[in-house]
Length: 269
Image (tube, rainbow, N blue to C red; front, top):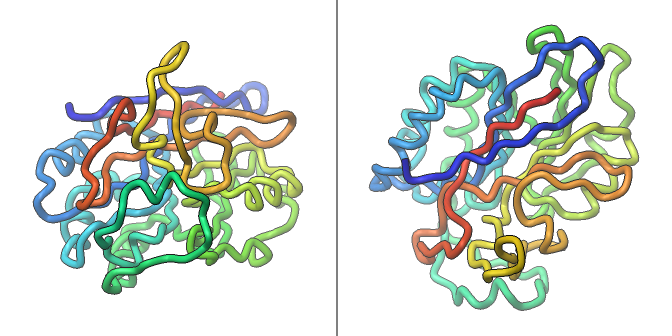
């Protein structure tokens, strides 16, 4: 196994409800040659999740859609939710990796367009819910979950007004799903009373420094504070936030330091 399994519990279910096991993964950045990562993704089914959430950046190559759908094949038989990240729309380009450590001026350098329509059709065709600008209600075990999502905030495609509003009365819990956890989204979802939010994008900092009690991220590549770069955190009375550090990297920056590839098993209790 070339990844670590992060485990967490979020105590948001009503009393007496059975636990829900959520497989959360992000940032696969798959290419046809990443055989070890493909094998690891196929092994996710062994975790026996009740629900799968992917927070985007599936692709890392123009020919990666068939590879991605094959890697996810058995997971696509389970209930699933997904959103996209910038790397599902545009192929990666060579760039100075140190630019991630400088203030974000909003400029983006895109590679060639990727066949994201094919990916969306493949995932939705197997039953996963596309939460880019939409809501979905599903029942897992004895719990009714309302989910809502946005497209990628890193590309300023996150029009939260399209899904804003209080959760439906029928929902036992409400969750948000987005690729890049910008503070504007966290604040908007908090205002609507969501219970938890799932995101990716950060790669856990990708390069982390040794620090007291573990390691410290140098960046999140968004305006999320660095201490929230991966794992489960909560600030005040905001929704719980779970950020996946992801499985892959850009093919032009295949280095992760003290932030190994990961998938997460998040149990709602």
